[in-house]
Structure formats: structure tokens, C-alpha cells
Image (cartoon, rainbow, N blue to C red; front, side, top):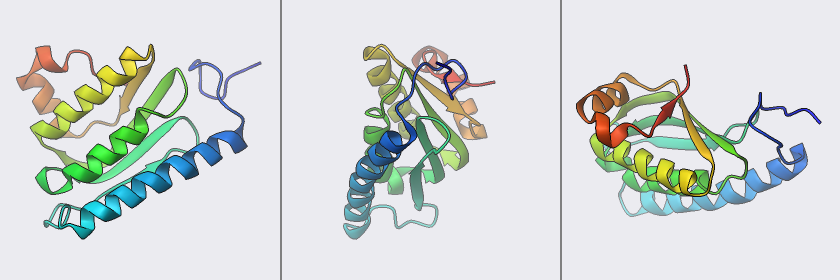
Length: 147
């Protein structure tokens, strides 16, 4: 049986993954809406969205990850760490900025996934992530960035 995820291992049937995505992301969207209702994520760059990837297990983040969007990022990473599969992907191509606390949250999410015997792979890191990794190489050493 071949994997649809280029060596990432077996994946659930398409319908099962879609159902998982819908249920899990519905909860994350609700938590994000709660965060926005309490005033988080309302700054000029505060809009952060997350949605499931349809071609592999993982998520796409869009927006800025900073003080204003911290609750949204936390909710999205909480869902991301529970997505099934040996490899979970986080596409950062839509992220304009990550502050140091957001990078620390990525490091914690990576530790959670790694502790489960799985991998978290970051795709298309923004310049700000690369700069934080340069400033804190030891703390960020475990982050895996796709080529």
C-alpha cells in the first residue's frame, strides 16, 4: 500500500481525515472566536488564521504571530499536535511575522509531537523565524524545516 504523503507513513482514508479535520478544526475555530471576542487578535497585525491542509496531515497558518494573536496560535498548535500520523506538517507560507514567543510555542509543539514519537515539519518559514533561530540556535535546534 503506497502512502499519499511521500514516505510519511500510512494515512487515514480521505473521508476519515476530512472528518477528523472538520471536528478538530471546528473546536479550534470556536476557541479562536472566543479569543477574538475577549479582545485578543484585534491589533493591526493581529489577524491569524489556521486551516487544515487537505493534501497531508497538518495546517496552514496565515497572518502574524505576535502578542495579539497568541491565543489563536495556541489553539491552532493544540489542534496540530493531535493530528494523527507519523509526520505533521505546518505550512508557514502565509505567515508574515513570528515573534520570539511564537517561536517558543513552535518549539513546545515540536517537543509534544516528538514526545509522541512523531515529527513536526515546518514549511516556508518566514524571515522572522530564521532570524530567531539564528539568535537562539540551541533552543531552536530541534525544529525541522523542510528544504
